[in-house]
Image (cartoon, rainbow, N blue to C red; front, side, top):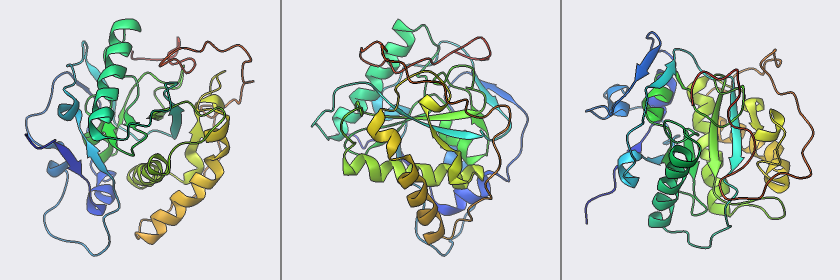
Length: 274
């Protein structure tokens, strides 16, 4: 069996990424070389590995995007936590995780009419982290933002993480929670974001996502992210006040549709991609 392709991102990649500069880009196809290794200096650096293991799109046999992926030449302002609104599976295998990513992409492209997977990253209940929208890992490493479709009217300022399951009445697995903390610490380090930038989908749109239980965990997750960053020698950025692009905290609807992969508004008239 062929080895599953993945990225192993180190602390040097995290801290150097934001220093890389380039103009805005529209990326249509896959890159020939490993994008993360291209953004990583040779040599060694003291400190534990800070970034999580990431399974890229080739691992789950992703379809190519049906249109150009838009990449903005700056960091997002927020990291949005979602749930997938799927069953709380007890299949914690890598194969299940990869199949989940494929199913999400098929739904987003075939049912929603989007050009690719809506969110940038996906975490399974087994704790596996996977690339979602194309060109996400190399854009994170360079301090840029791949525009997705996951939080209506705010996709230009928000990067999204889909967490497998439905978390209205129960919480995620420990494996998923630990992977989410590591992923959030990676993103906050790469983008120079304070953990206060970690928010739930319902903070921007009228939705129950990421579920009552997972949403209630966000303060604890922010604290764990800050501790993780400090323990790996990653500076924690100063918190900044929410601007006009910040959360509006709309009411959570009582009658949100209950169907697989639906977790609230994902695109709006202010969004520049689909």
